[in-house]
Image (cartoon, rainbow, N blue to C red; front, top):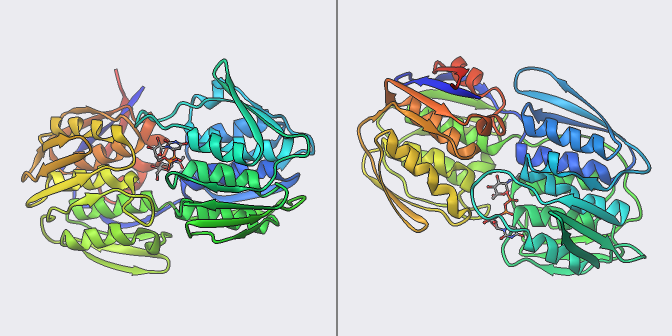
Length: 425
Ligand code: UD1
């Protein structure tokens, strides 16, 4: 086990480059299962989940070579055979929730699939009902046995249908989309998720020969095709990592240029930084955040995209903890995300929660203490809090942070932060 030792007080300054989005990369890798041949998926973040997804693809019979170009990014070369396996075991699946993304592609390609129900972050109940209902609408029969989801298409394969999601679930939209591209006829997904990572997946599938209309809107229309082909594709930059560095710059009253980010994917978050008092300048390849004062408190309400991202909520909570004034945070996506606020309180934050609302009264300074990250974004929030706390903060449970941030401490150190990785006894 390892932990981060963060000594507070540094003002972050310099440039940082954002790698590809974890939440896209894993789905793009899963989508390779839809076609036989040689894929190249570039701009991957160098994180454990990418390695686990590579291992999962190998179990399906693919050959996967990961080439890392530096401490944060790399490329996957995936060779998908004509006949692929259709079983994903618990030993891999339990290690990350995104493994459920192989359900749709395997069902489309093999007509049947057995996938262990995933584990992942401890941030809420994270049901699979919308995945299951959607695939059932396409004609799959789905049962659960011994911890596995078993799905089988009818003898002629999946058939297009209209699926109305109760909620724009990212994972359910992706699974239904990946299943539908090889189904017979037209599929319509209503109330689909609109996240940039969904658009990225649609663009990959389009390049592979799929016919999809409406990417980025709440209605996706898919005309099934008989077969798809392999392609070379680069992952969209990670908006959450980019946003994390933006908040870090604002909190530490720093000056950080975030390269290779898409500011249009972070409109609300960047507007919030402006409301907090930062100067934000954006161009098509990134943005710069300059802060010359103590941040002002900003309210945050998490919602499906284009609303404020739940994955940036803990980082903004950390900023509000040291802001001037009082902020209300409303978490609408994952009910357990406020566990993190108890850790923030250990650093001296003045926080009160009531259901899915939290009120943070900014204090002039936090004070370093040992804290534990409960999920990847909570971990990032705690590191940011450590950057502005007096003395030393030890952040344990950093395997969570490593799942979403490639070379996090190296990148923060390059900006002037005092952060080191050490054994957690
Ligand atoms: C993805 C992201 C995660 C992000 C989230 C919301 C990945 C690997 N993870 O997670 O970082 O925070 O989108 O932007 O891409 N739900 C159900 N039934 C379902 C599906 C979802 O009840 O069938 C619930 C979940 O419990 C959760 C909410 O819907 O409360 C949102 O889930 P969803 O949008 O599916 O998020 P994920 O795809 O799991």
